[in-house]
Amino acid sequence: MDFMQFVRDIPDFPQEGVLFRDITPVLQNAEALHAAVDRFCDILKKETFDYVLGPESRGFIFGVPVAYAMHKGFIPVRKPGKLPGKVITQSYDLEYGSNSLEMHADALKPGDRVVVVDDLIATGGTTKAICELVEQLGAHIVSLNFFIELEALKGRQLLSNYTVNSIITY
Image 1 (cartoon, rainbow, N blue to C red):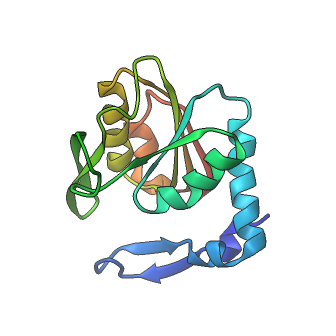
Image 2: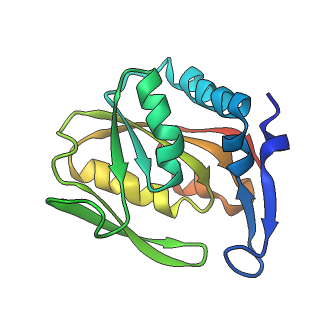
Image 3: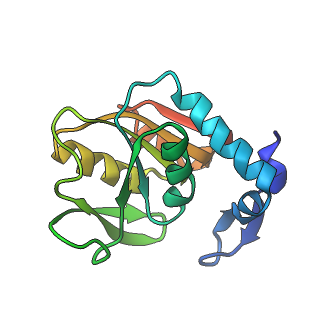
């Protein structure tokens, strides 16, 4: 399926000079959504892993159905203050600011194998923070998997120690 026909370009969002790649049309089209989840599963079927991990919020959109289809657990990574109980935190820089991510401190144990599923890789800062959270708990990143990769922002270079897969690239 040609997924690019379903990705909408929104100029100057969330700020002037940024071209936002909107996946909402993919999600609205049942066949495109089904095909996207299937494509992630096809990429991951050769991998051995215990959990799918997805960052808030669009990582949830693709990560949960992938985890379900592959009979794996799903681990959410959230913005600060959204998870109950004991959490671990990692800060990171964005293209236009900074933020932090949290994960439950007991979400993983040493030796667990994790794949990350998210909608987009840009500079790679968010994903690098996720990798640091996973590794802080002694778990292993098997692969990083994205629906969209913005090649010009060189996120793959920041994540060069990991296997990076993307479905479509700009």
